[in-house]
Length: 248
Image (tube, rainbow, N blue to C red; front, side):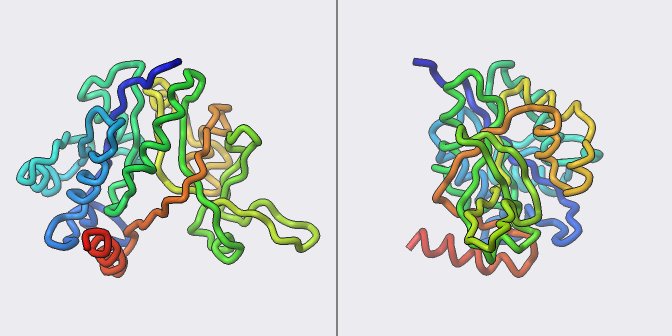
């Protein structure tokens, strides 16, 4: 039976954000948001190491003060995935390892969902994994919730902001929403960052379409775990309540 390669969790954390500047430092129950993400992620037993990747001195110093492993990266990256690659290379992640891009705005992330992403890498043919969940037809109408359709073997066919699939006969369709968490083999991560954004990615503003346009298979994992991201300051209260409830 194939064994898992070494797995690294990297949390990209940039200060600048159009909707929520300084988001990684946002206070949640007395600790900055990145601290919560880090401490949740390190509960995933499959991860060899978890660290923060930032481009900002304020985040870097706050991480050091709280004993959160952190590396400084360039400030001109186009995406969090680019930042993750730079961090992975700076700590010399092995060529055959798996890197998990853990979103820095998921302070209530479920460690078991990270495990679900990693286990498929026992198969040497798996290059990229990402989680999805069943959603309602009402949720499918929301362009902020990315929809996905996939093959019988759970390989993504397409991601879209539009409701897919479309029912021609007004029957109730089964919709799946994408959760923005990815795991890459190191080779696939390098290849992804080296590629130019394609037509579909530019149209939908979804970077995962770069993989599909270049025929890099993306394995989707149906999860029962929910994702509670922080996009705006008003989301802090909601996620704080979730964390408090779990602690009770």
